[in-house]
Image (cartoon, rainbow, N blue to C red):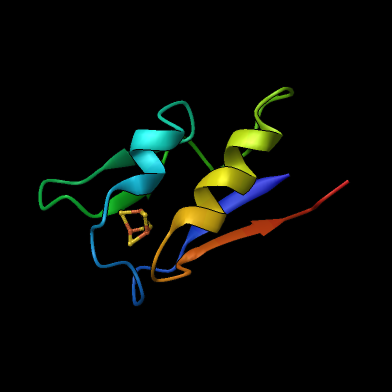
Length: 66
Ligand code: F3S
């Protein structure tokens, strides 16, 4: 599973890095970023889905669902 943020949609709400700090970080202006290459480690799938569901802009893509 991988996560990605559509930077064209992200408005910096910050729920991704609050809910799943192992997967997301923030840039200097508070916009979300994916850590490393966005690969979701085993056991973090729920956090990835939670972050995606809670992004008000629906800017988070989750791909490679098992
Ligand atoms: Fe951006 Fe959504 Fe996170 S708007 S900062 S990707 S919660």
